[in-house]
Length: 213
Picture 1 (spheres, one colour):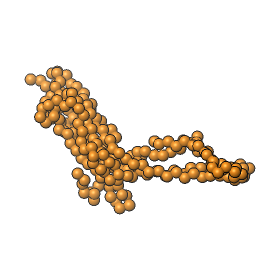
Picture 2: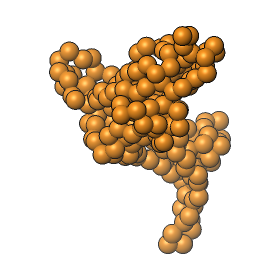
Picture 3: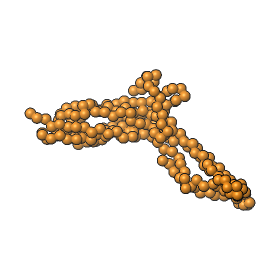
Picture 4: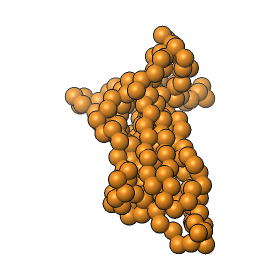
């Protein structure tokens, strides 16, 4: 009897501690928890065969990741679990684990986790080959710390620089912790803030826009 072949299409989206001495320290200014690998074995299977999905994640940002959860998408309504039942929802692992960040100064890499799903391929009509896209997605809570320094310039100083043909630069100084979210100020808003030293008002307001990315 001929069996229907299935070709798996694997995709990863970014969301048991090992021996840290055997792992290199990886850091990223713009990422938090990252997917190191997402694989399926075998990549080509027949109807009724079991497939192992392996996922490894690691915190390479600057702060602790909490409520880390991994979800397997694309198996709903077709694939079967170890008991032979059709899976009716995404397959979730973890949900409340915590991953600490790396400490480069001490040569300590960030926490990582490995998990595995074992599923049975869906029923496919004989004589055809089907591509089955499977996606792993990791979500987590992450705190981003940021510091914003604002440089103020008096009217007299601003006029003096104008007469000399000088520009007031670096009106804002922004420092962000490593992670997926950063504080930033669009370039068009990075104009000097000029203080009216002759004003008798107790307070002065200088609006500007600050974004996160």
